[in-house]
Length: 80
Image (tube, rainbow, N blue to C red; front, side):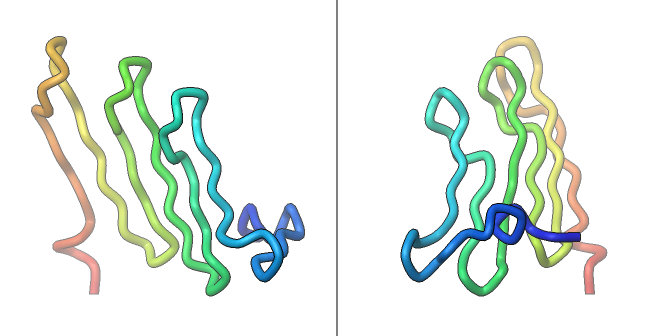
């Protein structure tokens, strides 16, 4: 599967790292010239609910109605 930069034929030398932001300025996706990328998803209140990277790591978060983080799950401990 192609990365977003590959799909866009992004020129890192000319344009620098690829960064895609949400309407409120939060980074939703970033990629560098080495092919490393990260992406995240946020809920409608702006809380990060998911994060992953090109190395296969991911984290998931849940929040209560007051935006307090109440749950985190990740594969960091299980990844070798």
